[in-house]
Amino acid sequence: MAHYAFLDENNIVIQVISGRDEGEDGVDWEQFYADEVGKPCKRTSYRTYGNRHPTGEAFRGNYAGIGYIYDPVNDVFYEPQRYPSWVLNTESWLWEPPTDQPQDVPTIWDETSQSWKEIV
Image 1 (cartoon, rainbow, N blue to C red):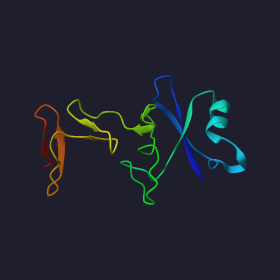
Image 2 (cartoon, helix red, strand yellow):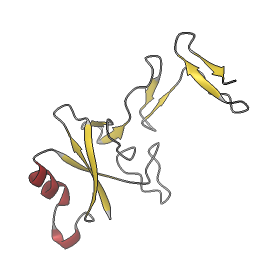
Image 3 (cartoon, rainbow, N blue to C red):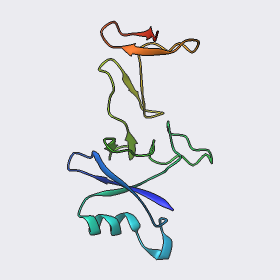
Image 4 (cartoon, one colour):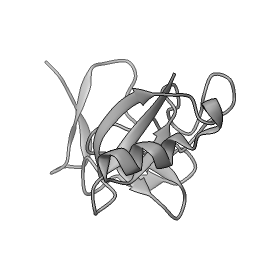
């Protein structure tokens, strides 16, 4: 089973469906679903995250979710920017904060101070 993301006019994911495997029955399923729905359609890999997949076959950066952005130049999906100070890593296609998150305590990002704050 494959998954497909439908895009709006700004390349934002508006829907994700499960469908036929690419190439099954000799059909271009991306094109088939795009024609049926009347929206651009791109296959997305369910287990791809951070441009990695357990099988080593990462596909389109990340699994597409509603609201994700499709970059047609790099042929990848990535989530919307969480905070203005975070930078998109174009190897992993994940947003990265200016400082690493501490691993020893639960924290939340504070954009005003641009630092991690302990959750108490």
